[in-house]
Length: 404
Image (cartoon, rainbow, N blue to C red; front, side, top):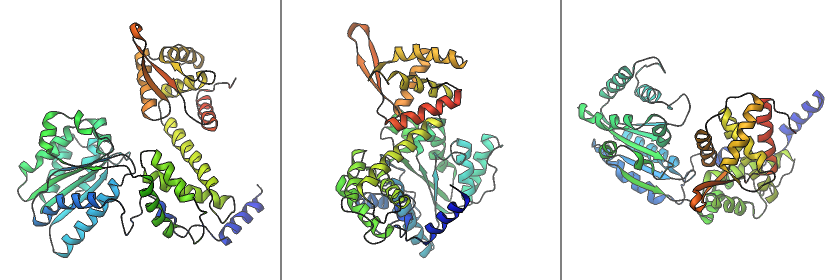
């Protein structure tokens, strides 16, 4: 495209009417005026945290549910209502919120404590202090507070899996040394079995209450999308059946409202790029492919080099066979390591990398019994040709492989 054509394209884009009225209404950061199909969870969480308004420490509480089931939205909603009432009635109450999965924010115990201390007004560096010192700074910041401090830790399972559960034990025992401040933990987890892997003393000290967030069904998702589309799009921007299709596709994937919103938003973006005023079902199909491609490609891009080599081996082998065995993958992987001049890992470690790729949803690895010959895993790949091609090219570019 020439520079003049590019300028013309930009000018036409500015002058053209958009299908969007407020695109933010289709993002996870948007706070709707009316939160649908989560009344029970809102009331349960509200009743658990209400004692904080009278200066009593509420029970520790954990929210469980799959991605896109409204956990974070409800926590932020209840947090906002709590703080509003506390301010109106001049009640000492502080609610801290941290996403434990955000890199360089709270992905280590140190960063978590530093972030919490800073939210309480303590000036601490992001790195550099001894662990005991950062705990002391955080403790001193808590002592300066009055009333109740609720610490909401989103995706807490990600941090526990990375650094262990000792920090949780320390947080739950901190009330023993505080006189005028009371601390309560609010955990948010996508893993329903999260606490089962904790040390028994940590589980005992938490003594948490639980609130379960079930997946949305297709009807609930359709109602959520309908309310959002009224705010997000101009009138008559969606063809009949678009909302139902987004809802049905998201309902198939664990009732994920985030997925449904993403499908609708990306479908709108694709429609605009094709210079049409109407969003149709075919835009949803293209949006689904784009979202899946972007997710898988970005997931693989962040993996270590041996994971990429193992995946490349699997992609190559499944071109001719639908299902392959772990042992066969290892043999081909060793040959590939020799080709790219990389030291090979052990078969056990490669087996672990295959499990990780399976958990990430990039491949499917199913354990099968071979009778007296033991068990093995059958590996298959359920990715579109375009995604497979992108992944193969990424690895080829990384390791200067020749595409044969």
